[in-house]
Every structure is written in structure tokens, then in C-alpha cells.
Image 1 (spheres, rainbow, N blue to C red):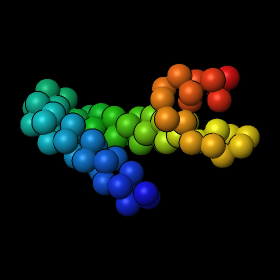
Image 2 (image 1 turned 60 degrees about the horizontal axis):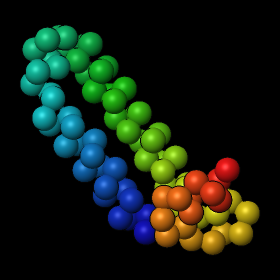
Image 3 (image 1 turned 90 degrees about the horizontal axis):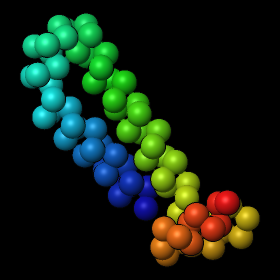
Image 4 (image 1 turned 180 degrees about the vertical axis):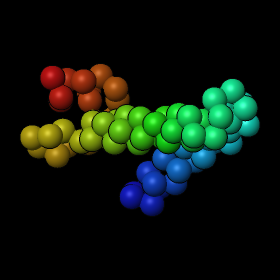
Length: 75
């Protein structure tokens, strides 16, 4: 569902942010560290969206149960 997908995205972004926040701020400084974390969260959101779009076939709407089904449907 939308709530489950949102929870997974938030968990991925917060998890990576919490683990790397202290190091990023210490190494890069306040401005560059926060920009790096923000850019990584945008990349995570983008790739998660691409992965979610592969869940169903674009033409028929049929669900892809395996990775190979998703590849066949999208190619």
C-alpha cells in the first residue's frame, strides 16, 4: 500500500541519515554535510519510485511476482 511504501522510504532515508550524520557533519561541515544527506535522500526516493513502478506491467496492469517477470514486462 501507499502507507507501507512510504514507511519503507522514510525508514531507508532516516536509517542512512542517522548512521552517517555525525561523520558527514564532522568531515564535510554543516552546509556540505546537510547537502550530501539531502542529495542521498533524493536519490533513495527516486530509485524507490522506479522500483515501485516496476511492480505492475505498464500495459496490462498485471502484477509481477518475480524480478524476471518485471524485466520481461518492462522490456
